[in-house]
Length: 182
Image (cartoon, rainbow, N blue to C red; front, side):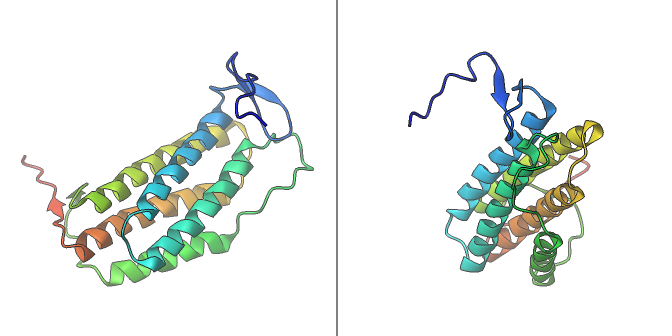
């Protein structure tokens, strides 16, 4: 099987279910940004970090694949078999956020992204996550989507922010507070 099919050479692609749409379609933008996020989380997971974090990120990547499948599916094809997103996927992130937050100094101010390389990667992933969330919001204005998708993406951006703080703290980085006076 060849990796290139030439079917997308005219700016069209197929949704799961076969329907052809423009590569600039809201559905393609939504699942494309989720795919980008998944790739970047893979980069974060490949860093020298705690195994529990790696396991959580692996779960996140698998969940993002489910979300991508949901977003890539033709909504008119109701017989497609796509794994389901579960409330538990959101709860798992909340549990991890609470555990990490309890071990961190209280946040007294906005912080600038950075502190060390791994924390910076988490912040980039967070911003990609926010874009995926925005693109999915645009899609939901025209099409019905599973509300857990937006919940998961929203919670995931929170998780990535707290993870950035935790890794900065654990690895001896310095959180730089925002100076509103410049």
